[in-house]
Image (tube, rainbow, N blue to C red; front, side, top):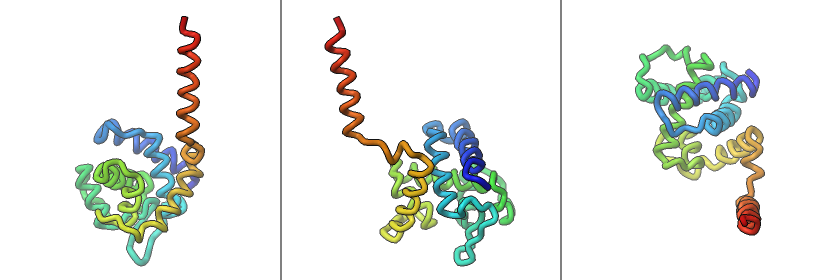
Length: 168
């Protein structure tokens, strides 16, 4: 699959999550995050399989993570081969990520590391994964890399100052 196809599916999935499960979800941000995870995990290959961990599909879901996500979404248990279906894999993987994201109080770093490690205890072992994720996320979402808080404060402050000066 191409990055554009994965991002389109991720955006559809994030919109579905916002409507049905998590009303706090910003679909565009989550789609960018999920697209970056897919790149790091499988390089957008829906048939990817990790022989060491038995992780499958775009988001490299393991069987325990699959079962958790199916339970949270109240889906019937599907066959393991269903994890090679990009739509199903993205739905479960996005659910699993959102669960981690909420669990860690929207701390992206802890959530991404917990997603990768497949459990609820992110630790220093995930820092290599975090670096790979950041690179993929910044490529996917250039505004993240170029955001400068000081510049934003100066621009907003300048706009307010100009308004204050000319308000009469």
